[in-house]
Amino acid sequence: MPGICLVGLQWGDEGKGKVTDLLAGDVDVVVRYQGGNNAGHTVVVDGARYALHLIPTGILYPGCVPVIGNGVVINPQVLLEEMEALEARGVDVSRLRISGNAHLIMPYHLELDRVTERRLGKNRLGTTKRGIGPAYADKAARVGLRVQDLLDPKIFGEKLAVVLKEKNLVLTRVYGRLPFDAREISDAYLAYGERLRPYITDTAALVQHALDDGRTVLFEGAQATMLDLDHGTYPFVTSSNPVAGGACAGAGIGPRDIDRVIGVTKAYCTRVGSGPFPSEADPADAEVLVEAGGEYGTTTGRRRRTGWFDAVAARYAARLNALTELVVTKLDVLSAFERVKVCVAYTFEGRRYDGFPEHQTVFNKCTPIYEELPGWDADITGARRPEDLPAAARTYVEAVQELVGVPVTWASVGPGRDQIVRFRR
Ligand code: IMP
Image (cartoon, rainbow, N blue to C red; front, side):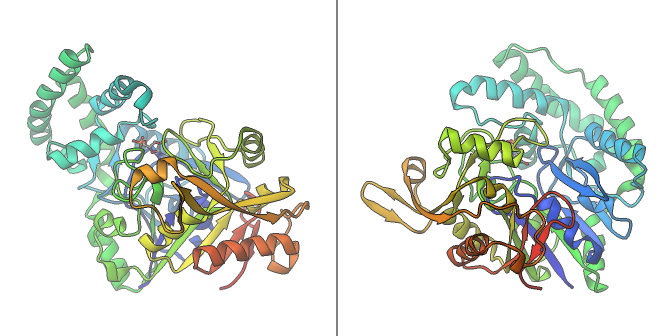
């Protein structure tokens, strides 16, 4: 006790790293339970900015054990680079623990991600091209290689030989690419394995023991609800389950181990890659949001698509994750507007949708119904208590809370650690 799950409610990049930072002092273990280096958490600690892709943010807090759970897909080269980069900045990485059951992203996954996106042409998903989808596909097809295989050269070689035969056929015959060499992959990966050996362990047992001992465990979701493989805007989703329920399978715990579910949402909305986005702003407002919000991807540097807060999607996410509380980030970005729009419902073919549409066609083609709220025309980055905020900014937060039906605990008003307004304990 207690287990806390932190989930994004939109299409990722909600600022979950900042919330981890707020909780970090009280957390003993931080576990990543899905995704891979498609994620990007930016955390600012003591004025230093860290962009983490694979390693849980817990690495930055000396009292905390960071864990990469079984549900994550790991590119070992990227992981080692990230570890080295942190060490070069004086961060101790010795506490990191990696699940032996996590699957590996292999060089052919990266290549397959690239060529399938190219083949899809205008239907492409806009993936991060980090090999995430192909790695999870192999996991489900039961031909994936796992972290623990790195520690057994014989098994690794056997499994690689089987899978590479098929991958090379696909790459050469279907896509006209060059085949991969098993020896080259083995040499590189087994060397990575030796370096990772001290960190590999049964992380599910570690997490369970921590919970049994009364320590606080934070389950850190990457990406977000609307990118969930089952519940998001399929097929424009990632290949794992960022929803809170995903923490159970991806970290090896039971549902009763989660006591709090904190949902993080921007005060507006962004998404990267393709796919429907009903509350996408018109180009002029989108430009303001991109510039005021610095809306460029941590992982790929891509400019994000921006729009207004979508209460329909947020209610859907609140329900799917059984949220206990809500954190609103980047409230200060909306200071740039005289009036602020909120999407309260959708309409399609004469029907109003207050709940998330069952059928994707509706979500793809619906028109947002907006309510407008007054802006606050003031710099709120110095606010620390609700009463420091202009009345209109408070009204906005209250409207979000009301529309989603979940209490707001914090609103962030800037990137710094202290730039936070606490609404309740
Ligand atoms: P993939 O996860 O690389 O396969 O990409 C699938 C979709 O998820 C694409 O639309 C990506 O832009 C999106 N995506 C993946 N990771 C993130 C993230 O951390 N933030 C925002 N979008 C993401």
